[in-house]
Length: 139
Ligand SMILES: CC[C@@H](C(=O)O)C(=O)SCCNC(=O)CCNC(=O)[C@H](O)C(C)(C)COP(=O)(O)OP(=O)(O)OC[C@H]1O[C@@H](n2cnc3c(N)ncnc32)[C@H](O)[C@@H]1OP(=O)(O)O
Ligand SMILES: [Co+2]
Image (cartoon, rainbow, N blue to C red; front, side, top):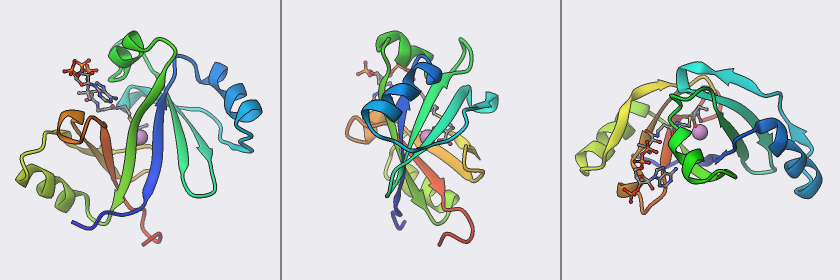
């Protein structure tokens, strides 16, 4: 597998609306996207562009969200995952499985419209790690 660029850093928050002023006024972010719902992934999402990557603000969509337990443990939110691009999602999944890492579910379409999967933080030095297939044309 060939590891690609860091696509985004996922930051969980109990409220995207309440988090935006911090990114705008404290951090000086100028490219803050419109929040949108991604019920299939159990989250609401807002992308913030930085010069070399993106911050992905994620808020639980409902009580069954995969980030609900994280927010319960970290009520103010916090850094939740990192996401690296890979050229081929199934090749990457097979790579991690062959190494005995716990891939969390089957690849599914993520917020950028390409397939993603997660590897359990236990097998990734304590960091929940997402892999996404590089969008066509970005290779
Ligand atoms: C916007 C769409 C998409 C994109 O395109 O970018 C996304 O990013 S969606 C983001 C949200 N989706 C996911 O996170 C899916 C994958 N995650 C999961 O399946 C679960 O969150 C999890 C990783 C299996 C954890 O589930 P949880 O119910 O929270 O389990 P526990 O509370 O029992 O935790 C088990 C264990 O793992 C540690 N943990 C949990 N979350 C994290 C984290 N974000 N970073 C580091 N470690 C984490 C937790 O502390 C427990 O540790 P131990 O107590 O030592 O066992
Ligand atoms: Co993500």
